[in-house]
Length: 369
Ligand SMILES: NC(=O)CC[C@H](N)C(=O)O
Image (cartoon, rainbow, N blue to C red):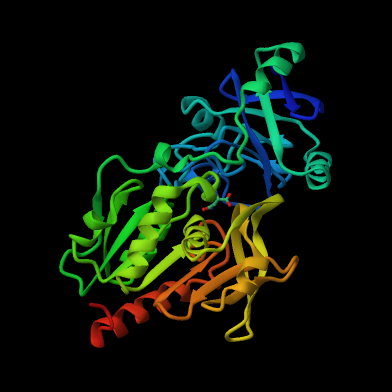
């Protein structure tokens, strides 16, 4: 017999389903991802820390779990909501079932939920907190959900960043990049290292001076969870990295921090973008890209209009939100979406090449002091 579970939303919507993963109670901000594949990469993306994920794909778990398909060492999500959950899996290389994977890693989930209804609900009401439980009554949950912190104003990177700095790639490579880990996805580092970059990944609160002492040719600012506007320590690091004149590239949270360091504010979106087929237009080349996205905050369009030093390079074709910026007086650029796309289409991987070309140009003709 499957155990009963409840999902309660902050505004009082209560839905009943069946327990998956670990028996327990867990709260967070509820958001949905429309990707049809790549569930394990999504659950282990540290940008999702503090969030309950609704997978819109109707079947989840069919291909089991596989150790190599992780974006970090463990699932980072606060909970999981699915429609039909596959307890059986059909892939030879799988290391186990998704149920075993979630249970052994303490992820609380709920299945047999009308996810289509739920997504339409979140889309109309906006982002909000939720709680899942396979042990508490609906009345107990009403008290419990009040303890879940709001994503607005929440700093989370320091909870998911690496404790110690580490290196990835060939130590004799011609290019060295200092990576600020605010909750980085492994495939971002892999994308840099596979292009011949020697990376040193630093903990979130590392001072700029410490990163500079390693003598990198460029700086990379990673993705990560939480509200960028309260990350004063990281905004300061980005400002100093910009002042150094060395090339800088930011992805997602790193993009938001480049904007904040340039005097442009960020805001919480109504319900965010999370999926694998978000259409983006590159305004420089005029080309379209299908992109992988996962963000709930965005860079303020109005502030950009007032800042002559910031050029918009990419926009979202569904809602015109800012998807990429470049500074006119610095070798610095960033995108709101995920060019490493794990999971997702590989249309935007050229951005890693552009970063490397920028570094090569700087090495050939340094403009830095
Ligand atoms: N993937 C990310 O880096 C997410 C950035 C930020 N936490 C947001 O939700 O917008």
